[in-house]
Image (cartoon, rainbow, N blue to C red):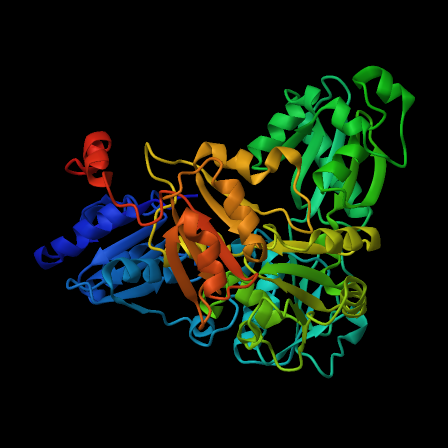
Length: 590
């Protein structure tokens, strides 16, 4: 939610700073004298001027860090942005950083955990959508953590937040696999991330965060009421089965969209998702009902909705019945089994290690096993690996050997990166691997990468789509040992005269040229791009009638991208076109 921010300009000298922040923060400007009257009306206050005046102004209104707004003070020259009040809970630390970014200033943060690079335990849950199960003793837990007392971390579910914890693990924190490992003589603090009601130890200070990973499926009798009673009863049922009632989403059949209970969920800020009877009927469930099928056209609502909503996850609470409702709970497999092993298929980009995505590099830094396509991916991309990680090239391994190696690490609970060139979904070799993962019930995900056709456009300094000339890019390959569908023969694709990027076809360039010449003019610009973004990158330009000679004379290999089309090096007419059609973009104030 967008924060409502007020700016207080204390002196005339801060006017320029105030104007910039008003625009960039979409903030309101108020008078210093009205701060008290509007203390509860804004989420944050930014003072422009002396820190002393700021402190004296807010002092009469400060009550509690859980309810006070954030306060930041910026000097009139815009050189420092100081988090004054509600650093974590109110968001003053983050706002100070944001203000500093806008002004090119220095953020001044005095919170110990921030400056020590430690997790802010009081706002960690808010950042990742977790609820804090028990706030009693929170200050004692924070004290133990920031003073680096031995801390155990137990994860029972996995999401973006737990990925962050694992990738930023402080030296005094040890990941444990069960509560049995939490020895009170060894640990002073226990941090738990779990959707389950845990029997937490009493001899160790403990904080439990409840992640929103559960999907609750529910069914309702017609005009079931009262809604508040149903909400309480389902919550009590979840707790009786060992769950905290903190769900990622609630799911049901679409014909119940106007029920009072659904309106109540939305009023409480819950996410509600609907499925058709046909979608629900296709799901196999433990407790189908002929009666339900006769009434709504599917043998299951709550169980089927929970399974569908969790992306066919694990049904952990089967159908429970109330007086006029049913409920079930499921959690996605990837949220439950990350520490039992996970495979991330990562796109390496075209070759330059700097062109792997930020997410991809984080995956590489975290991996226990990196299996990379050695003939296509430079080993330099893997040099960011953590100590002890296994780094293997798959160049001398067949598919069965690759899958077996990944399975061995997976069964040890390892995080595995399968590193493919470019973007793995474009002429990659991941289909067979994913089929294997599916058969074995293995958790996997794909991190996209920059494809070599994008690198070709960048290195050629060419816009591959030109208004009124060509608005289509075709990614394809010539027909070699891999047969092409009849409708995708090159000469048929060439009819559109689009920009064409041809992968894996340097070895059959004579056939490629012959097919293209059936539709493209002989003088159509072409480029043969070898090892794009690699240290030995070479690019050769020419025209289509000379494409095969260009490739043969320069001894280019399979790692060559062939680009065909008038968009290559085309600069003509663009200025006039944009002046004619897009002048509205350059009007004053836009």
